[in-house]
Image 1 (tube, rainbow, N blue to C red):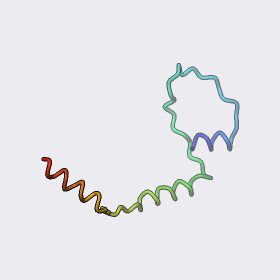
Image 2: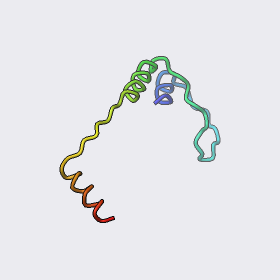
Image 3: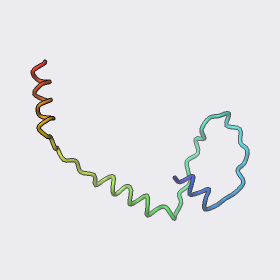
Length: 69
């Protein structure tokens, strides 16, 4: 998304570089307009919590698997 934002905010004519079909190893520049969005996404990802929820069907499957071993 950084490359897309960078090219949208500063449109220039792209230079015809010969990469021979390979992807560039250049990192996208930081875009100050996206900083708050990126920090918010990182916060959301860090705060993910999982619950151990098992329904009766999953419990039955676990029993069936343990009997077959």
